[in-house]
Length: 522
Image (cartoon, rainbow, N blue to C red; front, top):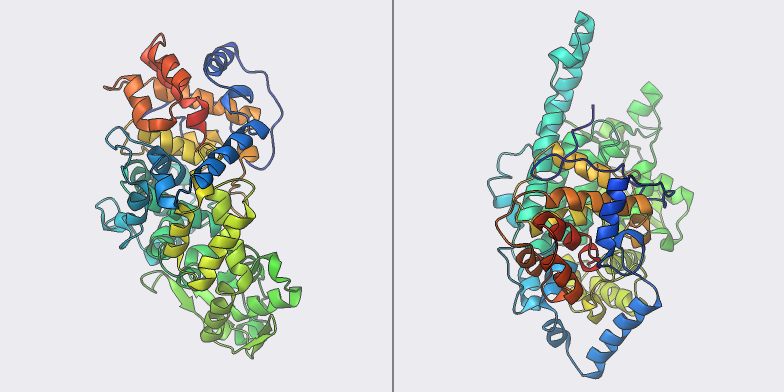
């Protein structure tokens, strides 16, 4: 049974979600929903339901903003000082009532990149299970299911999966931290890299492992070396199970000869196409097979603390492999060497830079911005802190309102605007699903789309309006105008502030705010 509809602090009714991969067909909304949409359109300009226009007018204004800054001879630091609220919205997760726009946004952003990940030292993350512990829970759940089946007992009445509870605890910790963190730029980078290295709970048996995956493979490396992140990701049980590599056996290995088990190419293919060199490298199917063979024997074991990774030599394909013109030896060391090669290949830098600029700057990444970030990655051999700092110094990144928020971004920004600090699960999970982006459940290994057009269909717009109306119904001590100012700062448009200030009720005022074009974009 799906979780009850809800939001961060309580329940609520929402529309079915829209597909993130295509624009849904228009459905006639109910009268109450039409009234809500009509009220929200009173302060918006552009597409139906509140999304602002993204055509020549918006792009022209953006170009003029950038041109004006350049013509004035402003350095990146000087230019960013003009838009402190943009640091909280474009690079962060949205303003909070207890957080003022930084007086020096560049220093505020760069300061978040120093030191270890702050979430890992917080009480909410302390004691959360390791990858090995999650594997043990999955094993125990399987054994319990089999025992109950033999006894003819109902799973519904006699079984509460430990792995499911682990997932819920991890989800609450992750969402809660994103709602209250004082380092939202760093947290946005965590979500970006988690999407780049997608692990989805749509593949059975991975849900309990995604939290450990984030803590063990993503968070420690967000401001480190890309190679180190790749090595941690590709060896983590979450990725090995998601892409089927845990059971991949070399055809000529001892296990392959005895058991007639075969090679699984998924991890080898996705590691090359999605995680590192991309199709730009022009590799062949034989290269994919070679990489898959180098990764045979990379498996899982709940006894292997902390992550649960285990190399099994008897399943590994013997002999060297030729990958993109280079020879790599057999054994675990050969796979590691191949990953180091792929993670520092020249097309990897371009692929990563393109995704970073698309996420932080514009759906159509400016070529000059991509070239700059790629150059930083190449010059530092994949220093992700340097790449993040380069994004901050891109003048194009400080043009407001160029990106439509994804459902998760919208969910978090509304929660932060209202001062929420905890996420109630499963209510929050149900709301994200209805907004169209269920947590850790991307449909394909390439993750969730970063293109605004994939999130602005009619059903998606109506879902956000319904979400805004539901969230606005909660009692709050602060006046709606104060919430609007704290959330948007200088990006709050005068007509939006006027509509919020003169609305018939606090609920109507907040619904108007959350459906305004400046709130829907970042």
